[in-house]
Structure formats: C-alpha cells, structure tokens
Length: 412
Image (cartoon, rainbow, N blue to C red; front, side, top):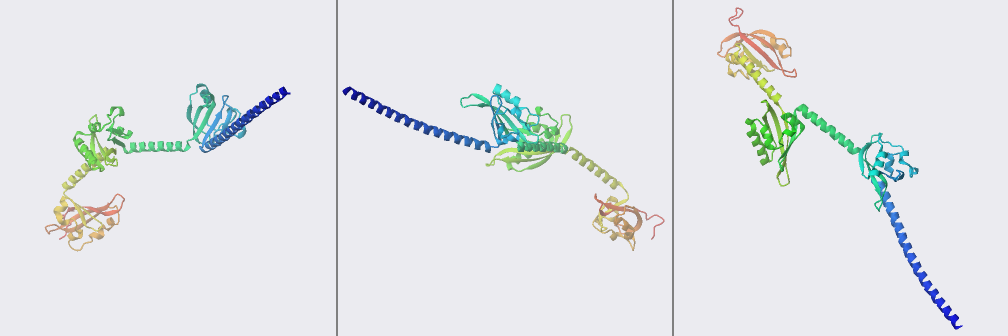
C-alpha cells in the first residue's frame, strides 16, 4: 500500500510537471501566433503600400517569371500591352502589344540570360512615347527569378524635344539667311563659344579656332582691333551693352564688315560672369552704301556741271533744292521761298503746271518770265514733271530751265 501511494504521488508530480510544460508551450504558441499575426498584418500593409505605390507612380510595370509568364502588372501597363486581370500566369508572348514594331520579348530573354539591364524609347500606334526599361527580377536573397518591364510615359518630353529641335533648326536657318550668329564668352574660364553661324561668317572651322577672346581679336582687321578691344573692355567696366561695326580680315585678303551687339551678365556681387552677343555680316549693306554714295557723288557732279537750272519744289511750290546754276540765277536765299516770288508780271504758270501737282506723269513744257538775282527780267523755258516718294505719293515737282531770253520768241 505504501508503495502504491508513492507511485501515485510520483505520477501526480509528473502530471503536474507536464501541465506546467503544456502551459509554457501554450504561452509560446500564443506568442508565436501573435508574432505571426503581426507579420501577416505587416505583409498586408506592405502589399497595400506596394499596390498604392504602383498605382500612383503612373509607370506601366509588368513582372515576368523565368519563363516570361506574367506574374502581375499595373494598370498603366495595359496602355502598352492589352492586358486584363485573367492574363496573370499567361505567357506575355500571347498578349498583343500596341508598340510599333518592337520585340521586347527577345530583349527580356536576353536580360534574363545576361543580367544586363536594357532601356530604349518605344512608340505606340496611337503616337504615345515611352521609355522602356528591362531589368532582372531579384529576390531578397539576390536570386534572379524573372524580369521586370517598366514603361515611363515620355510623350510630353519627346514632343518638347521635337519642338526644341525644330526651334533650333529654324534659328540656325534664320541665322544663315540673316548671315548672323551668336557667341558667348565665359569670363571665368576665358572660353569663347561660337554658334555655327559665327563659324560660317568668319569662314573658319571649329577645330582651327583657339576658342578665346585673343583668338577672336586676331581675326579682326588690324585697323579696327584696338577699337573693338576698347569697346568690349569698357563694357566690362561699366556693365553696359554696346554695339559696334568693324571689319574682319579674311585669310585671302578679303574684308568683311560686321555689326556686333553685346551684353554682360554678372553675379549678385556685380562680378562679370559671361558676355553674350550676336554678330551679323553687313558687307553687302556697306557695299550698297558705298555704291549709293558713289552714285550720289556722281549725280551731284553732273548736276553741278549742268549749265541749265535744276530745281525742286514741294507741294506748296516752295523751292527745296537748286543746283549751282539755279542758285547762281535765283540767289542762295531762294531755298525756302515760293517760286512765285520770282515771277514777273501776271502769268498762268501755276495753271499750266497744275497737272504735274495732280499726279500726272506727263512732262509739261512752258515759258515764263523770271526775275534774276540781279533784278533783270529773263525768259526761261521750263520742263516740269511730278516728284513722288517710294510709295507713289506726290511730294512736289522737279524742273529744269534754260534761259532763252535771246530767242526771237522772247517778249519785252
């Protein structure tokens, strides 16, 4: 009996120990279950964060496994591939693409084999542009388990770049037509940047130019070099824009005329940072001016040598110009006086020349008695015609006159 009691007591103690162990295990299970629940909640939160991230970055993304089967995709990816929810686990090769002649599957396979990411611009049939990136899919253990395709919409950027290229091309075309170019002088590094138009104007290849202010001065005509240098350095001192016309001396000895406009930009402390300017070839303009000057000089010489009177009057019949023969006849004070001041007696001169002042292109001949500067009465033969401006508006009359007093027709 004593032995039985001891066995029962021992069994009871073992049961008590087992109970405590079970209680400890149960507590551990509760703890593990709580940790597992926290992990599940954390994973759900991460999945929600990932879903919201993928939905809001507006980047089309397709996750493929090692067999290029679709794992998942974002809604933006459906704008590139015609994807629906039931396409998960299907080969991407079975899904029709809206890309113009692009084979991204071959590139995806190449990335999977080489582990080297790839990217390029692609275009859909609707005209949208995307930057396609293909990268290996790596697990947290750095195991390659497929590829990821992303599509970033760059349509706005592509359109802006196209517009920029168009504007740049139009600017170059405008500069070529206007024979002008743009230059910029980096005053910090003493580096001179020229546009294509400047190189064309200076007739020099970019590789043959030293790209410095001193190299530019060497191309300026020696007689103008000091003037150009002074004008530029003065602008750096007073920080005022300036304009200057000077010559260039070409390698073959030809001379070109250019007009330059420049301004200098400074930092907040007033230190010059860069100078920006434009230069335009005005050689033809200068040649035209020289031609016009020569023609004007020749015309003046001819008019000075003509023995006949040549006169201009405005619409009010006021003398505005006389050649030397005219000033010798009427006097130097005739300019600004009415032509009628020199009429002698009652004449119908104005009536005769009225068609001229009405705009007629007819040359009208008349004879009129006029008072010479010494007061003597002389008979003049006049040939009058209308004087018009460049737009055909009447501005007066141009006349030539000859003294025919000794003509038998003259009357006393």
